[in-house]
Image (cartoon, rainbow, N blue to C red; front, side):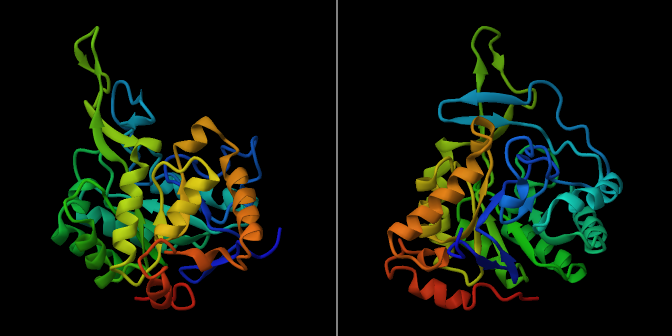
Length: 322
């Protein structure tokens, strides 16, 4: 491989722009029977909270046409267990590790940010204010502009590491919220998280999911993700981590061309566990065939000006603010 896929993202040098979506890659090693995780650019780990959570009861997964509904509910072992397992994970992963942090209330977000700040193996943080599967916190912060402002501002005060704020697509104006979190010190934004949806078992005459509603992901949400990244990347000056239905090299290129500096793979890896490797090879091949020296040259290529203004605002791709 050449250096055509090497990028700088939030001040970190990545071998390529491919990451994993939180919740779809465990804590970094679950896919090692399928590919070497060090082939990734970075790994976004499963969401973590202060206290252990059992997640939502009942059926948590339902297949839908071109997608999947989940209502896992942030099941995780809590921050204390997380701190114990991270050193062993880092021994096997020589790529940047990204912690996805969550809270039910503002104080919990602040508390876990303080904890993660002290974990040297964690290089970046994804502040999740968009999970649709928990009754408190989560999407409640991401769907309200002033709540998004508050949680970003307060976490920024206690967190010096690069911070990506993961936005909810379940809003009227995604651009407004992206600009707000940028104002409050976000170094990047991640979008999109899942769309709120539901499915019904017609024999039982009941919702399939135990939580009734869940997050829709997979190819079905891709057009929405592309639209939102296109809009946001023309309004902000920080990088976008794009996700939402990427299942091929062509999908990945579309996300980059609408404005994503890097991409995360989620549901697509359930059907094809070697998807990151296929996309990595595909992006390299695309660059060679189209005389592209570096993949960052096509970030925002689908913008009206070919992405020139956005790439200029990003500067040397992404100096760390805050």
